[in-house]
Length: 331
Image 1 (cartoon, rainbow, N blue to C red):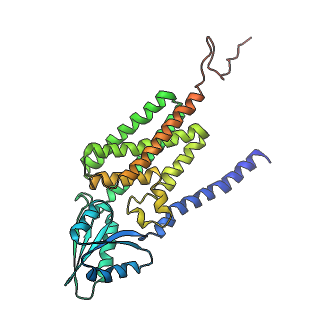
Image 2 (cartoon, rainbow, N blue to C red; image 1 turned 180 degrees about the vertical axis):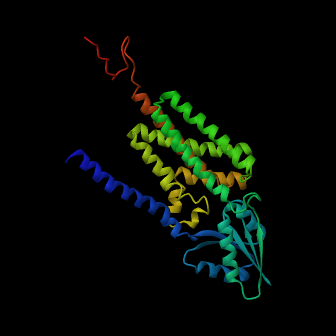
């Protein structure tokens, strides 16, 4: 088959397939957004909480209900990131404990569910246990802050590959650039916009680790697969990692198994780590920290090993670089 025909068929087939894949990865989770075993609590005496627990459990697996003896225990569970909120029934209504810093959309959902379950005329009091920053009450800035870190990781891995950095130079570029990106992200998101709280250096470290995990992954895939590895890394970090991260809501608001798989990718793990260090004093960060560390270490090790086994072309003494064509000599 002539070359032009093959190229035409490639364009006609590959682009529609790629667009279909992207639409599926982004649109399907968005269309199925809703609580899926979302952990929430019910606090108080068993005789008061039993009807509330039964009503929540009747919602077809929407909620994973935990019982607590009182509001203080429920608040501790929210601050530890064990649950997203809790209902505390009372004689004249109920109190809803939320954490808008864990996801403003989740807090709003719980408020709607609580209001619907109350008898007519009963009062609902809402207490935001861990509020989002006043400068970013809906978490919009926080949600979009994760995407640039994923993009930075892709660009970092691609640059290391295209510039043919090898050995210690590749490792230094990955680690040094990730640190610089994390610093810049903290200066903007924490110092300037106030969308992130917590310790400044902790936030910068979380952003840097997210960038390093992404960059090392892309560089490692490129070292193993060639330039195609950059595209595969972009799929993992952007096409799947971004819509499956739960950064703008919560992993439990995504359909199964997307919410779980997203937390195993650098973007989703980075979002959870950043939220934990920003608003919850590091609670719930052990797992995402381990995930990011595994991606980063595996990527750096792969880059070091593969580059060690494939040394860079050397220039022969007194001649052109290896593989170069000698210049023609006029006669």
